[in-house]
Length: 617
Image 1 (cartoon, rainbow, N blue to C red):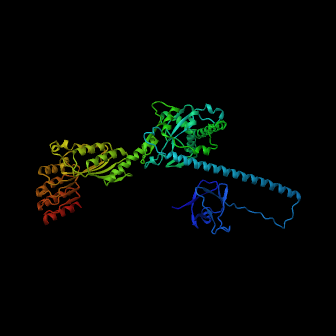
Image 2 (tube, rainbow, N blue to C red; image 1 turned 60 degrees about the vertical axis):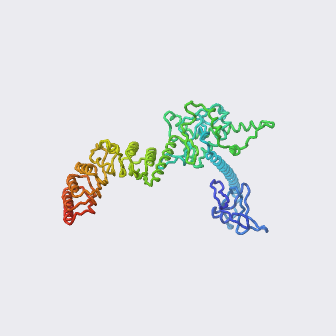
Image 3 (cartoon, rainbow, N blue to C red; image 1 turned 90 degrees about the vertical axis):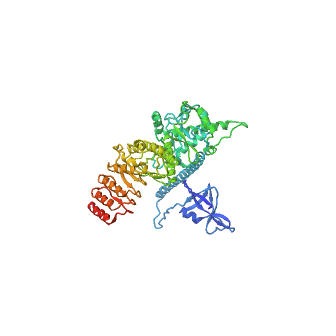
């Protein structure tokens, strides 16, 4: 671990750490290192004392020059100033006495002005240093409060709040006892509420609420005064603390205002600078009154009271659960309000409780569900393109499907393009669950792979329209623009149905792989091809349909205008079947791919097919 010494330029708040070197077993800071960071350095102060360069036992400065390490201290660096000297010309004649006295008078005046300027500069430096020290204190104390963790049960009301006067008035100690205050809760948004793609600012801000009237202000400020002063100072100065961003005072606004509280919130927003300054002045005056009262007390019971504001704030800690619950006794609120200030309680990923406005609550809630969807898709080794709103996923079980449906419906991220494969032997019940989830989604482009679907014996006894009603309803869904389905042989009769085409559906296509197809199903298939159904890809590989089957398909292809791909490989088709198909190709202009491998079409059949292709080209 590298040990360092902290430095900052006089009058500046930025702290720079310089690494130490070890000389004869002692940690020191090389003067050359200081010069590299602070060019023109003249000397270094530790408080009001100047840090001397180290000397050896003979009181000679150690070469190269270095200074001692001052742990837990920020050293102040003072830079050299360049002074231009004016040299008199010895050849000039001596001025007359009157001119000399005038010059001396002017020089004395300039000297006095120089002294005054130096005193003002010293006072500014001291004030700046006090302000920097105060800011460091406020930041450290506020960070301790913001990182304070609460148990869910004891964190029953928001913990961050400030008070502002009800009316926009100027500070006047004579009227301070007549001033009415309202308590305003603060939304604890930050990195834990940031959502991808959100344009909502995530800095601490006043809750969207008109605030709560403070009862018995004297008792209230006595109990919560130090905490309130710290919060008001933090808001006035602005800071970035513990994952929270506190904007400068002029930018502190509510994110939005509810209708019933809008006028009050707008009033608070427009006068917030004056209000914060007034509240700080009120608290400071109260502190001074208590201090004077404490000084007048005599006896052993006299209570010691801090002399300065820094000491006053040093002892401030975050409010405990009991102190938060007692807050309600000092405020006027409706029973239905429950002192929440339109804030919502949420739990971060680390288990910390935060109170945030509805906008940040919704953003955080949505981000949590979007992350859940990402995790579900990743677990299924799928792809989720959030920019395009596209998901490609293969689900392996009914349980995985149910988890995916829940995630996609809760995420509300706008999934418009869904490519989903049912990678298990799914059933009618699984299709019903999918249809229900689809209705609740924003999907308009669907590719559904049901090649492993297995119809039950009972469902096969139902009518065709009943068996395939689920898929028909999906096709007729009004939000669908494009649908492509990959179906098993159990859906062969679907090709005979003519679903009601929605005016929104631009494209409907079906792909089938039919193995071991029966005679009756083959007849249904051929008949449906003559009706120009949505079937675009048909795989009849290894079904042994023979020349007779090829002849039947050829007659259908002469009419069909939708089928683009036909696989007839390994179907015992001979010369006669090939000749029939070649005649169909001379008429059909839609079919783009025809596979006839592992058939015995012979030379004559091949020649006829090639001649047919010439007519197409």
